[in-house]
Length: 253
Length: 309
Image 1 (cartoon, each protein chain N blue to C red):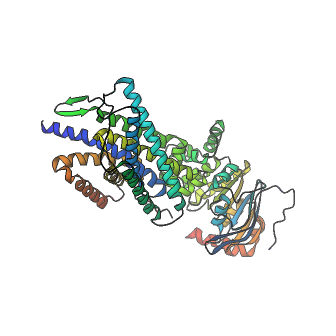
Image 2: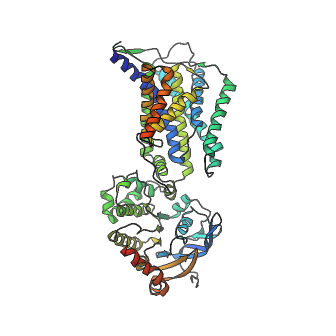
Image 3: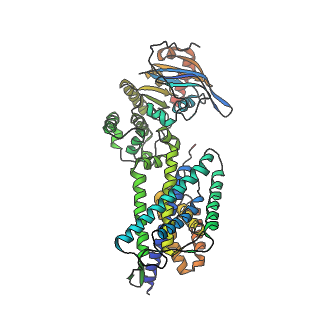
């Protein structure tokens, strides 16, 4: 497996350096290395229970590595609290959206900005979210639990943007969405990335993920087995068989 | 007295008692909402609160049979007594959490709940050993003014309980709805992991819940003393169990539910005592609790908890 060639001068935002994590005796991530450059969309592919969600939890500090280091913007963050990581500019879009169902859409957006001081920047970011998602603006006074899945995903992305993050970690942004919303969500992810936010995305929908990602990693039972540009991976026969084929089964299901 | 007057009198008594239970019930519900922990130490935080109030009134020179205060002196003494009692009770609650419960935060099973029972008995016995078993006269600075409404009597102490309870419940509702830490409390209650990933320091939210709940219990304990003109080391268990019932009746974890449950339990106690007898009040209260739980297990305003896995 070729290791990422990242010489000095490459502008790395997030790195995993030989990260190992355990749940009790279960060894989940095994000597995992990722390098995510500023301004990229990087996708993490893999089957069920391969360590994708653990990767996200390790970035956010919900799971701590037993060995290895997580480096964000040149600083080792693996010992920092989740709150400290959010303050440094990492925001999550959680699997299954995980909005606060009995709070309004607006309150959910406020929670996204929880670690920030109140001020005019809050309103700027709110306007940005509302202009990206006019639907979210319409629904702002509604309880988040009453929205459709697609609308909830937009709020979840908006909530992450309210942290004014440098890196957004997305866990399965297309999960449970109708094809129409999947397209919209991926368009929005690209738009957010064009505006300057780096994106690290776990995604089952490999075809969609590879259509917008710059690069991707493939994780199998806790080991990175492949990485490369999205174009390379799209042409890779084993990827086509394992992930792009799987998509067609899912799409007709 | 006409029967209407009798009913009106029960409503006056019941809502006053109920307001006290509601204040106490809020502490159970705030902590349960965040930690899914039933905090039995809360019973005796209420009891200690009433003794703090007693000490504060004595320190301010209010004697059991002394002259009632009026005007600014009365308002000043009440404000100071409520403030000190609530602060002391709030700190007691936070102390209990830090010393006895935080070390058990990641222990699964009933260990934390059992610990709260232990802490409750420690408080109970400390007061028993330190201050004795006999009920203490509770000095009241309130003038014995009362108003006749038909045949029913409304005393100043009931008005005080209503006013203070409404102010505290209004304040708590504002806090939970509109302040940053209040919103963090609601978010944590709804999804602790997601709240943490927004950058909420859950430990601070827990401290806030214990402080607020315990401060409200302290205010309730002080009102108990002012209402009955006595306090004793046993009041935590009687009032606490009814307040806990109120929290469950309203839907534990639900703030308006605790308020509604408290008022209902107070009314049930007042009417039950009148129609049957005071000795049977608890039987009526707990029978109604059983019925509600059979037909509406999540409580009146509660939701069936979604599976959080």
